Image (cartoon, rainbow, N blue to C red; front, side, top):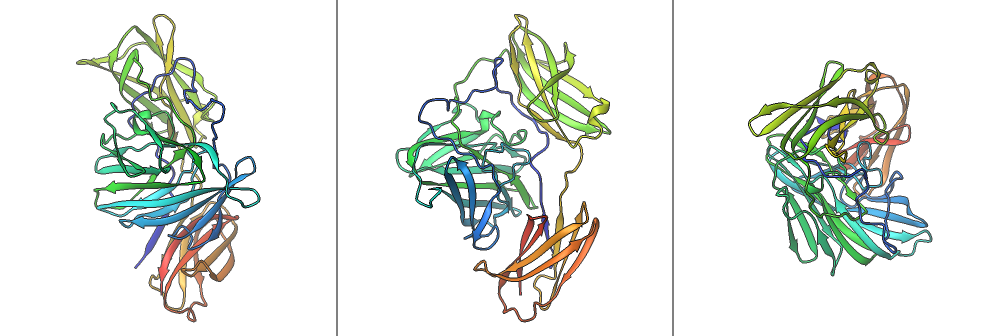
Length: 424
């Protein structure tokens, strides 16, 4: 039996509804005195338990001044598992952003407990905590699910008329399930139609569940994320109603396309591009689109030489009214090249005396393979030099291990690339 671990980045570019902005890109409501925000910017430190398995506990330093957080994987149902504990590649870096894998034809959830502590190890009580689950979207037979439990007295806010997620309360837990089946770009706070916020006071810990209802005949991995700010879900009237905003990579160019359903006092679009996701500049103006019944279809091709060597490019639309007012679309993230990643295949599984780890690397460097038992105790460590390109590494000395379940972990340059449960 062969086992594959693939580290997958956040989603590339998909259909997206657009949220209104009027020359101001900050519409969260967390500027009031006394609100307490936390940020999961640092890399997780494993404390104990099987790597990425149920019972594992991790520490995140400096989530706030003199405050650290501990994240414990409490349970996993429906065959769900954690592929990456906190992947900030294409998400809000301040968010807690796990990747969740769910097998074919299964409804899977992973349950996390997030607790806060002072630097001296004492429990930290947060005055106010706002947890916003982001990007609860869907596609085809995929429907994402997120749940938040911040205890008694918590309040809920979200777009009740968006028809993209359905939020239900059971006890102190709020669970949002995607019902719209629409894929949204990346994992950020632009698409409020697939977000919800739960707020409570005097919080020392809370429960977050993330998963997918997967109706496909194959397993999937989805990027999840919760952001520790509250947001204004007031519905506003937009001069342009969008049906979609997409991007496709064609050869060395990016083809942007968007469809509008309703336009009021609309003048033109400016297409803006960024290589950082923050600093945007105008690269073109689109005056009019093609009529398609009551809809209008627009397109713009970016084949500039400067995108040729870029891995990731960001785009947004600036919609301008005839009176000069403007609104920004969401930001589309386009991956032009694959980022450095390692794929590992461990075999045989079950094993007897040895295992073979096969993977590709983008550089010649040091790596480490560890094998841990179900209690998190490391029973074998191998430091190896890996080559650029394909590697085929045999790990011997396993014949004396008792029959049990183990976790094989690959670390490259001090960063855990992946881990896989193996059986003897």
